[in-house]
Image (cartoon, rainbow, N blue to C red; front, side, top):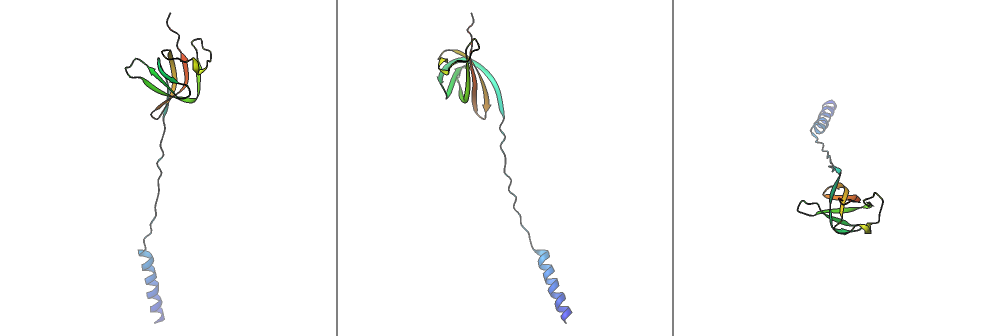
Length: 116
């Protein structure tokens, strides 16, 4: 009788363990990928706010808006570094910028020498 009772208890324990469900949760975090592209554009200054923004008329019909990076180098037509205050409205310039998401962030502005 003791043997039968032990067998029944062992069987009940085995059935309980065999039918038990396990649950696990896996969390996946999607990472965003940022693509940066550097390029240059030439146009006439429509608006300029040192340390903030530059707007160029590139001849495409719509003005192009750029953000100024934290460190922007300004170059005159002779290739010398100048102060930002020397960039004036209606001056022809070449901007070197990096595309960061939807923003075009300028890191270099060069005054273009007018044709003689």
